[in-house]
Length: 258
Ligand SMILES: NC(=O)c1ccc[n+]([C@@H]2O[C@H](COP(=O)([O-])OP(=O)(O)OC[C@H]3O[C@@H](n4cnc5c(N)ncnc54)[C@H](OP(=O)(O)O)[C@@H]3O)[C@@H](O)[C@H]2O)c1
Image (cartoon, rainbow, N blue to C red; front, side, top):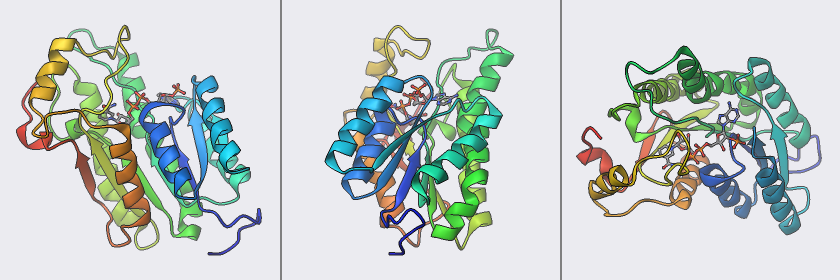
C-alpha cells in the first residue's frame, strides 16, 4: 500500500452522520478492520467525541471528528476539505446521514421537503462531487445508505421515499460516470433500528409489530448487519458497482403499504 503525505498508509473512510446508531456501527466495523475513520456529526458532539476517544485509545490517531450541517451548502465543501486535511487521503465515503419523518399529504411543508431532500439526496451528491478527485486518486469507492422504501412506498412518508429514490438513482448514475476509477454502491436497510420514541420520526408500536410480522426472517436486523455489508462493498467487491444490496431479512419481497 502506498504511504500518503501524512506518512500513514492506513486507508481512510468518511461516514456521514456517524456519531451514533447505524453510522457508528459502520465506523466501528471499518476501524476494527484497520481503517482510519472520520466521524462526521451535526448535533451529536458528545457521542462523536466519545466514539473517537474509544477508537483512539485502541489505536492512536485512528479516528477524527468533523462537524458540519449538511443543510448548509457551504459546509459540504468545508467537510470535504477538512476530511482531506486531517487524514491526508480518502479511500471510501459512506453517505449515511439522513432525516426521516412522516409528511402526510395536506400537512407537508416546503421546509420538510428541503430538509428531507437535502439530507438524503442533495448533500450526498455534492459531498460525492467534492470528494471524487480524492477517491479517483485512491481508486476508492462510495457507499450510499439508501432504504428499501426507495423503490417500495411507505405510506405518509412520500417525501422521504422520493429523496431515497433519488439517492438510489444517484448510486446507479455515478457508478457509470465515475467508472472505472471509483465504484459506487448502496445498502438498503429494512427494519434495523427504530427511530427514537417521542420524536417526529417515531413509529407507533402497532406499526412496528406489523412491519416485523412482514419480515420473512421474523426479526429486525442490527446496525452490524448494515456495517458488515458496507465493509463487504468497500473491501471485498472489486467487480461490483452500481448495485444496491437490500439488508432487510427478505422484507422487500413481501412489502405492502404500511
Ligand atoms: N434505522 C433504520 O432502521 C433504517 C431503515 C432504513 C434506512 N435507514 C437508513 O440508514 C441510515 C442510518 O440510519 P439511522 O437510523 O442510524 O439514521 P439516523 O439516526 O436517523 O440519522 C443519522 C444521523 O444523520 C445526521 N444528520 C441528519 N441531518 C443532518 C444534517 N443536515 N447535517 C449533518 N448530519 C445530519 C444526524 O447527526 P447528528 O445526530 O450529529 O445531528 C444523525 O445522527 C440512514 O441513511 C437511514 O435513512 C435506516
